[in-house]
Length: 101
Image 1 (tube, rainbow, N blue to C red):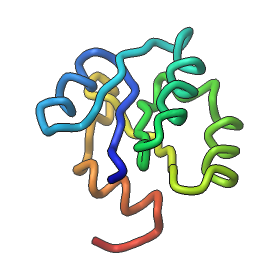
Image 2 (image 1 turned 45 degrees about the vertical axis):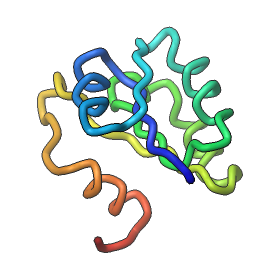
Image 3 (image 1 turned 180 degrees about the horizontal axis):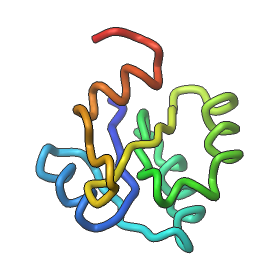
Image 4 (image 1 turned 90 degrees about the vertical axis):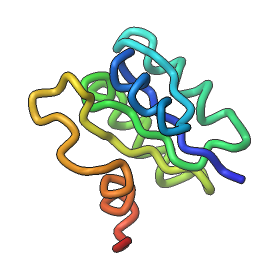
């Protein structure tokens, strides 16, 4: 079964871990290697990455979404972002996949 992973700051990852999501704490400098580690996992289905650390990874994220079957990477705001989590993770996933849940 595929899993949901979150890559982001400690506060965001900790919040998602409470709901059973696998979390990987990272900063912008380590984000490229952390992203590669996560997508290398056989069970990585959906990977959420906070907007603040995804800024430098736009091309790689697009490449993963277009060419890596079975895995999708979506950007989500972190808890410390000014907009914050405006809706649930399910809402962000639905938007990224273009489906209504």
